[in-house]
Structures are given as C-alpha cells and as structure tokens.
Amino acid sequence: MSSMQAHYAARDIEARILAGLRAAGLNPEQRLTPQELGALDHFHTGGLRASRELLEVAQIRAGDHVLDIGAGLAGSARLIASAVDCRVDCIEMSPDYCAGAVLLNRLTGLEDRIAVHEGSALDLPFPDHTFDVVWMQNVGMNIADKRTLYGQIARVLKPGGRYAFQEMAAGKVPTSNYPLPWATEPADNCLVSGDEMCSLLGGCGFITELFEDTSDLHMSRTAANATPAVAGQLGLSVFVDNLAQKAANARRSLEQGEVRLVRGVFRVD
Image (cartoon, rainbow, N blue to C red; front, top):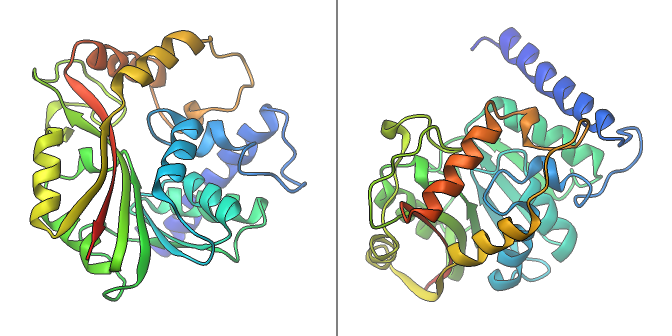
C-alpha cells in the first residue's frame, strides 16, 4: 500500500468510527471513557466484561509495562491503562485498526500511556525482557505457528513475567459452522485443543498459574442477556460484515462442543 493509499484508508476508518460514535449519541468533541466505547472496541468473545475479568486474574500492577498482541482498536489497552495506571504497547497487523486505535486513544486522553505499532505477533519488534505482562484476547485462532507465537511472547517477557490470555480452543468434534467471527472458511481456522495449548506453552518455558474453560459460563450469560440490536447502537457491526450470522455460528459451535472458550495466566521464570 502506498503512503497515499494508507492515508486515505486511515481517514476512512476514522470517519466510520466518528460516524458510529455520533449515531450512538456520543460526542467525540468531548472526552470519552473506555467504558463508553466498550461495545465498539472489544473485538473478542464476551466483550468488555470478559476483558474486565481477565484484567482481574492477570494481576497487572501500577507501573507495569504491558504488551497487547492483536490489539485491534486497543479497547483492552485503554481499559488496562486507565484502570491500573500503567504503560501499554499495542501490536496490530491491520493498518486500519492501528489508525482507529490512535484516534480512540486521543479521544479518551490516553495517548500518552498507549503506543500503537503495526506488526506481526510472530516477529515482535521489541527487545528481550521488555514487558511485565503480555495480554492477548481471541487472536491465536488465526495463527497456525503457535510455537513461534509462544516463543516470541516468552522472549519479550521479563523473568517472572506473565502471559494473560483469552482464546478459542478446539472442541471434541470438528468445526462446521462457517463463517465464524475469526474464520470465514476452514483454512482460516487455526484452533488447537486446550491440552495442546498448555503443552505448547510448557514447551516454551511457561508455568501454569491459571487455566480454565469458561464456555458454559459464557453461554449462560449470553442466553440470559440476549437483546436485539437497535438502530444507532454502538457495536462491532461498524467494522464486521455479517456480524449477526458470524456470532450465531460461534454460539452454535460452542453449544455443539466444536469450540471451547478458555482463559489462562502463565508465567516465565
């Protein structure tokens, strides 16, 4: 992409974000909070609630240096930076999402605590032993080379640092409901089982502090809180095509045991 094309792409996503905010009754000319943006910028299963719960178990402390891998629009990064008062670096492959993240960081007044980098999780552009915590939500299901991914995470963590994540894992039967939020077709779907995930992490030097399957909890909450979208409501449909179909397929896959939702905290010595 040329610099001119990148400029216009960035302006397009900024315009879409601003239009979505105004349609939802938010004024981008006034300081916004991460909580107000929660329906828009948490690109993962469970949304803002899941991010808050992961933040609780991750035990991030004030002054920590955090890396958010596959940060999207940096919703989790803003939640972390505002709730814990720490620095967060974001790595994201999509230049559009990077531009959107920079805009939303500015609208929330958090641009001084959050840095946005365009790049790959398989080749992290940071020195060894840089971060106290690495954070990742619903990213690994698109990455086939998980050994390299976990090796990169271990490399950039300080001794005693923690990797906190939420992820989709493979269930006991093959995935059959497409398109999914993370995979339009089977070739895009890079799930491994929870057992394999833990084994790969252990092979990269990680020690388990927490690993749990939260699928049933998520499904019960979804059933209890299901409400139809209304016109002007802030949400991921600003960016995600066929969102309702993809979300329904993900829910069906969970119900049928084709996928599982897991989260964990692993430590490196």
